[in-house]
Image 1: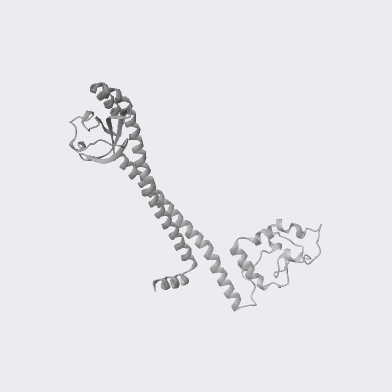
Image 2: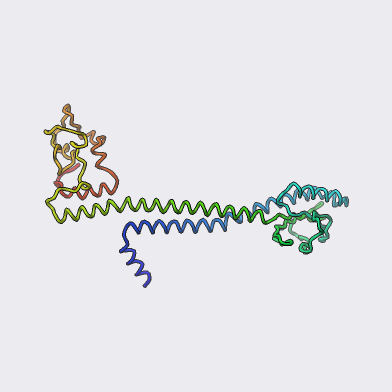
Length: 303
């Protein structure tokens, strides 16, 4: 029932509205695809880049603290991780544990937070990233195993703040949203312009054909007439077969008459280069109007 109603509504809809609603449908699909791409591709890509960066920092620190774990130099270990945290804005914390999860060194100023006491050995995993809450902040915690001759001797944890990532995602979403609004507004304007460009001449053509049908003896309306060569070229050669002839275009007359040269008339071979011929071509709508106008011409004329 609904499908039949929509089909009937679409049939009665004007061409202008059909073009407009078709453009809106395409814009809606583009907006939907952009939204899906943003949430399913771009955001996971940003998160993946942050995880990759934190893992790279963790592997670097694992290389630096390996000999310090073996020697038990915890003071030097702390200097290294504190310095690394100070030069990385996004890093919230760094701490190192033994394989059983006991903290060896950390960068927390007010003591080790209880939210991270869940830390457990990684087992067979060499790397793991989890989203944890520390206080009021959400942190991407990346843990990397420190090994010596294939034997785990410690774990390095690097915490990356989630807030900068959320801010960047919000800013990207805002920019993308504004860009889509501009694109949609421009597309709607251009679709309206295209619809008007197409439907206005068709409406005029319909009215002209109706007037011609009511009064067959009237002269052709301007939009149905082919260009008149003697008017476009200011020609006064009254002995030319095309001069004053409104029933057929000039290039069709030269196909039936002998070629005239030396008197200002062009041969048929150069008609395509003439501005009168080019003026008569136009776009599809102009050609349609000329085709209707050709109904009044002699049917046996050929180009």
